[in-house]
Length: 206
Image (cartoon, rainbow, N blue to C red; front, side, top):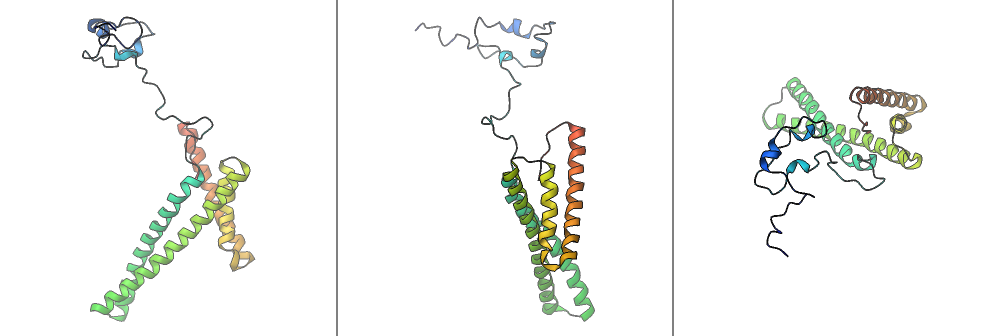
């Protein structure tokens, strides 16, 4: 092996000198290289490195976004935390209202406030968590059986969630819950379609 092997350029052919590298070129083929910085300390021209390569490498046939099953865990956890926060704030408001009406003070008032916060916080968290579990399960099953993940799955999953959540309260209430789920999921799909048309990017289904 010759002594000048470490000093050979990595790119094929002879690498240009520093003056040739920074010299502007008006041709269209090399106009895109003019914005790339050239390092005088390297033994090759960094402009030959293609910068427009994919940021991530996906296996063949794999989706470039997470599916409903992968998103379900984060959605359920987020719903529970949001429900706990909303219920806790409502518990604070109701607790102050009740203790003020009863003219409670000191330790009794503090205990009543904690009870209201824990009761309403846990109740709201359970409600939102249950709704999210039902919606995620319906969405995952639809994606598995249909083999697609589109707006149809979102609308059907939302409607089924309302129907199942109110299924024990009678036929009329069950239909009302399904209508609410259908309306919310339809509005969400319309929002996704509008975002997709404005940005020309692939939608992210929940």
